[in-house]
Length: 327
Length: 284
Image (cartoon, rainbow over all chains, first blue to last red; front, side, top):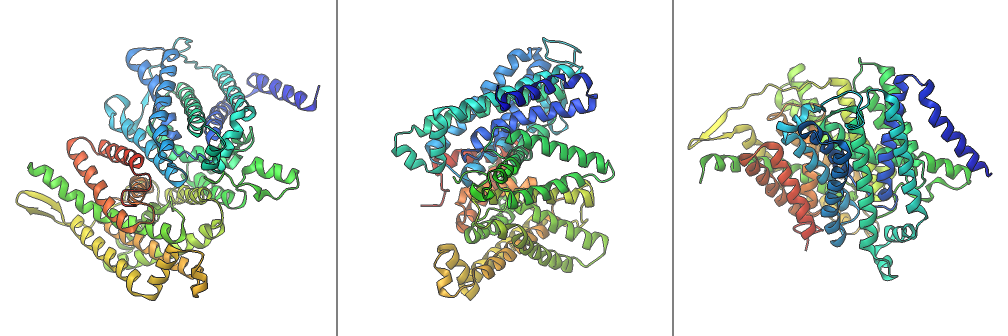
């Protein structure tokens, strides 16, 4: 048995046994870290090839709100609501992605078009205030412990759901990483024309990875919504959430499988630690320091934490690759 | 035509003036330095706080407060360039975008830390003008006039002065200007200062109409990018016209539905137009 396999088994054993002896507060943090890690990983599926989307807030918003609204108003079980939300996100990704790719909207322009998309979803959620509660947010109808409604007051259940979700995200990452599509996508990220010239179906490859990324982000948003129960447009969609996704993924590093998860761990541990440290007296202090660290990270560690560590390990200059491939 | 609709259209055009000013600043910076400042609207927020504190808290006369606000924003522009943009000038464009995005987080949270999340108003109440039963905000009318004057002043500066010519030269060809004896770094600083000053001017005009709070940048920021991209990033004239197209959509949409939906229309219009003209409306 190789060392890697042993390490993975030990890691799995620790992760599975954690809820048995972890206090509820830390379990709550762990669940959030796992769900966000899943979403960041989903974003990085696109981001690592240089398709930097600022629109994942839109997919997360749809994913969180659709099952919650369907359940609260029509009593439709999330087991159907979540697939509907994922389908809606994929549809939105196709509606916006296809013309973007067909018309060669890349780089800055792609980032800003997707930014507009996340604002469209945010503002639509606020505008539909009769059903969504607008910017005040809304709380889902609670029924206590129920598999049918996917609601569990006990955090242990959600821990295992989040853990399964995260592992599934890593599995998808690995599938794409090891598949032939990865080389095609890297070629497209470097130079679309050259990629098309050697016979790569640019449109097919880009659409596929975009749809997978949007679907997973919506799924992550849905589970997040089921877990926190209270939804607010600002916390699940819009420019702030989109930037949060982009930053955390890049801070961790988008080139390695665990990079985005490390990003989730670091950013959530940091914001939570700073929040506890400063308490409620200094609202904003935590995010101020977070903002400074983000800027420093982009300037001095453009490959992310995992990338920088790997750079040191391999005795390679860390500026070998940019945080995200050139468009 | 419906009189209220006409009123909405006039107010929309007047709002377009301020947006045009901000679009000019952002386009100038992009055209010359080739960096998109995601946090541009948050510099406006800083300017508005400066004016609020000078005028409403320390009783500085309003014109002096405005002047200090503009100069302070210009200094902030230079500071942003020195501290954040210079180190990433040679990085890929998206890293530059992200560095200024980090600045957005920083400025908004720092303002929350210093000033709290209260909405603050400088307390200057300008009259509402009445023409033929239509109501037009005097503050908006002034803002529109000043924004136009600012835009023309910038135009003449770029056309008639040596520094202006140097700026246009860099925007045309970054590689060759060094051979012509132009100090690129100095021009970058001048452009950052002008960009900051335009944000400061916009802050003066907006402080007369809106309450300032730490997240006011999120209200204008995305709209300004949309305008710049719609006009063609770096194309100042395109951005100028695009401001009025977008502000009209927002005004007319707001008349027929709600404010949020009018922004939804504007953003959707932008996304669709990007598919039709991916390099901007006015880029050949």
